Image 1 (cartoon, rainbow, N blue to C red):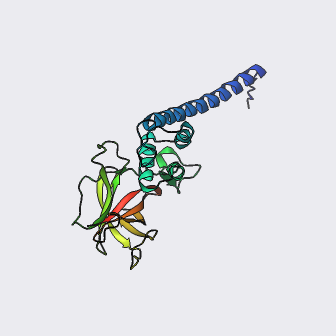
Image 2 (tube, rainbow, N blue to C red):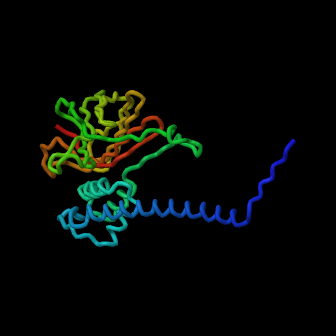
Image 3 (spheres, one colour):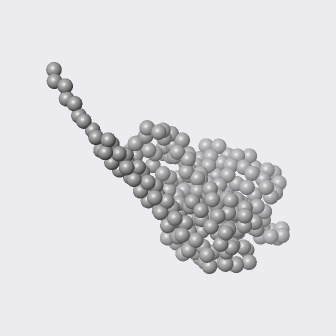
Length: 252
């Protein structure tokens, strides 16, 4: 039997340690630089372009804007999110807090040993290509779709007001018809703050629509048949869930 001895000098070990440490540092630096670029893009997309109150003022306090953009992974979605929150509420601080975690991606099945090939495919919301509705319905505009003009946003989802009506979503560029699995109980008298949710399924995906009543769409008009809602939409596919909160409306 032959024994092979490899002599490694102290200098070689030190050089190897320096190389590994430098590699880790550079990777961390690259990640930080990428995050900084996204935060700067967020700042640029919002300052002077997006109103921070319902009066339409677009000059942001820099401290608050930095808080909003800190750690963002999607500058455009952050801009659209804060616009939607301001439409729903008059509290900027509440809007900033909500938007910092507005797009929630929960990977519940991935473990520390997962490879890239085994990780779940993210859920990507799009705007409906075709709008399926008989008239009276619940829907929400897709404020996160930058490909459409601001005065003609896409539709994130739509479902008719019938008890067993399906809901339509565009997931990964395809319109899907989700069949109703569970319909949440509705109150006999509509009032602000009432909450309920419906659950739908199709092709291995589950969609949930949670509604929080925000009052009449028409102010004090007694003949108004439309109401505003704060809507949280989530779609789960192969262990991956994405949720979006946005303004919605139900009515005829």
